[in-house]
Structure formats: structure tokens, C-alpha cells
Length: 228
Image (cartoon, rainbow, N blue to C red; front, side, top):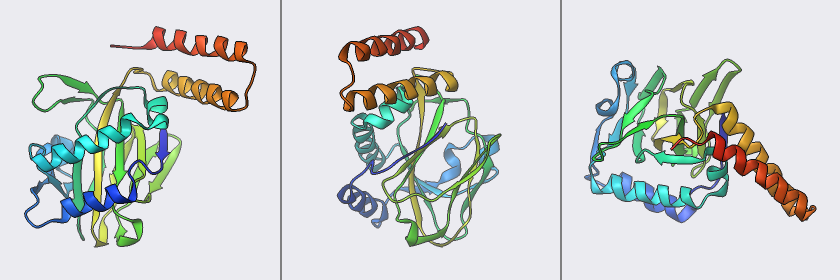
């Protein structure tokens, strides 16, 4: 899966968030503190200390907007979401090719999260920095993403990906991982297509009885495949 979701955050929310992140004294630390052995060798960026009040407050804002985003819920079917992390790439910084770890410990909870999907929320306008593309590789080819501020990219966590070197300006972004109710990518995408079809047929005022039967099939499959 590779999904782009526009306007997850409003212009006002983005201005506030960037202002908080760019303020003097923001708790930036070496990004390698949360990288595994493989990632630490190729990671060169900064991130806000996960334990800081700023990270928690901004992360809660992102989560609250995701909970209201119908496209995100339909496509991802989230069970658990890792607390959003905020990173910064200045000139000369990059994150080499890597694969996200399969399991992450949820901070302060004692629980673990299986990383089915990875997500990058772009916070900086693309014209404000040079380079810094999110490059995702799969058996189907390579995608290079530099999305508008407020847009979200969601992709399968098994994908090889990297952030190319920033050669000018500063790239701010938010990253997090999702454990879906549906572990299998193909099944999750089938449910997403079925849900979108139901929504489109509803908008066209199709036969209500047929829509009910179709929705019944969707929920039967969701019930069959869900892992809690």
C-alpha cells in the first residue's frame, strides 16, 4: 500500500506546529536515539525528545485529527498508533535506505505494537527546502514523495525507504507507525476498496437493500479477519 492523504492538518494548525518546533529551546536530540542497529548506521537527523511535553502535545493533536479522518480510518483500520515523533532535517542531513523494525515498544505503557504501516506527515512547504524527498522502494518500483505541508503518506512497513539529503532549507516532518486490525496487506486493501465502493454507491443513491447486503459482506469479512 502507498496512500496519500491531503490536508490532514489545517493551515492554522501547521503554522502553530511549525512555530512550536522552531522556537528557541525546543528539545531537539540526535535522531539515532530511537533507531535500531540498522537504522542508526544510516540516520542523520534530529527529533524532538519523545518524553517532552511538546512531543506529547503535538502528537495528541495529530492523533485527534487522524481519528476524524474518514479516508485514514477506512484505508488503515487502525488498532494501535505509535505516538507521533517529530523530526528535523537541516542541510546535509538524510536517512539512508532502511526497513522499519517489525515491533516497537509503546513508550511508558509496557505494550508492544506490530508495525503494519508506516506514515510520514509533511509539515514544511515543499518549496521551503531542497532535496529531502521520501523515497519508497518496492517490487513494483520506486516512488519519490515531496508532499504539500499537511499531507500524509502511508506505506507498508516492509517497504525499503529513505529520506534523500536535504541540500537547502529545513525539512520538518512527523512520523509514526500503525498496527492495523487487519495484519495482511492484501486483505486490508480489499476491505478498503469495498468500503470505498459502498460509499460511492451510497452517494449515487443506489438501491438501499443492495447497499445493506454489500455492507453486510464488508462487516462479515472485517469480523473474520480482525485481530485484537
